[in-house]
Length: 354
Image 1 (cartoon, helix red, strand yellow):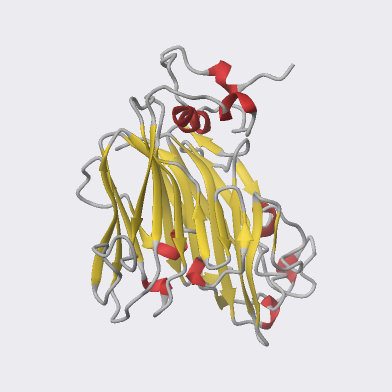
Image 2 (image 1 turned 30 degrees about the horizontal axis):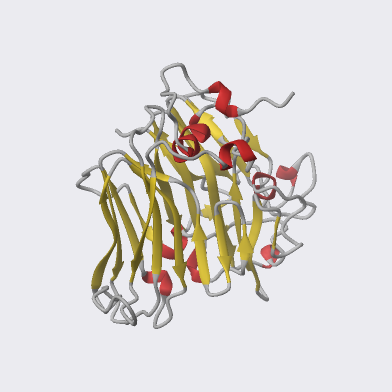
C-alpha cells in the first residue's frame, strides 16, 4: 500500500496544513517521500493561503511606472511581508547587453546583508547566460525565458533586487509568483546558495564548492568547468575528479563520487552532449581545438543530501594524473600533467536562520 508523506508530518505540526505549507515541509523531512504530483496533494484547498504575482521591468503597456533596467540601476523584484513563500520566478531573456553582468540579491526577514548574492542568470541555472535550452523539475531554460521553481520561504519579510552595474540598458521582464500563508512550519528552512568561482591549478589544488554550517539539505547544484588543454577536448579527463562530501565534521566523506559525470548522473564523460532526464542535465558543452567547457546541473528530491551540523564539499583531482594510460592502477608511474581550470559552481540548499 502506498504511504503518503502527508501521514508522516511531525506531531508538533498543525493539522491545518495548506498545500503550500506541505510543499515547504516535505523537502525538509529526512524520512519524507518525494513531492509527487498526486491528486491528494494537488487538490488540497483552503487553509488561508493566497497566491500573488509581482511583475517587474516592463513599463510598455498597462503599468508604465514599472522600473526598467537602466544603466547603473537597482530595481526591486519583490518587497513583501510574510509569512510566505516564493513559488516561481519567470524571467525573460534580457537583450541589450551582457546578461551575465546582472546581479540578484535576496534578503530574508530584515537581514542587513543579502543571503543570496550572485549573477541573476546563474541563479536561474542559465550559467553565464549561455546554456542550451533545457528542462528540469526546478530549473528550465526554454524559448526566450527561464523558470525557477525551488520554493523560497520567508517568515517576516523578503526583498529581492536586481542590479545592473553596467552602462547598458536591458529590455525584458520578470514575474515573481508567491504565496501568502497563515503560518510557517518550524522545520522550514530558508533557500540559500553557496556560489563559488575560481581558477585552480589541477590536479594539485582541491576545490571547495561549499562549507555550510548548521542543519540543512542540498536540493540542487550545478558546476561549470573548462580548460585550454588538448586532454580536455571531449571532457574525457577533466571530469575525472573525486567529489568528496563531508557531513557533520566527519574526517572521511560520507558521500564520494568517483567522477564529476557520476555526481551529475552520467557516465564515461560528457561525450553525449546536451541532454536531460528532468533531474540530471548537461546544459552546455563547448569543444575547442585545444580544450573545452561543459556545464552540468542536478536536481534532487529523494536523493537530497541531508546533514545535521555541517556540510563541506570538495572536488579533488589529486589522484588524477592526466596521463596515458589514464586507466591504470599505478598512475604515479606516468607523467603528471598540470593546467589551470576556471570554474563556476552553485549549491542550492535549505538551512536554518543563523
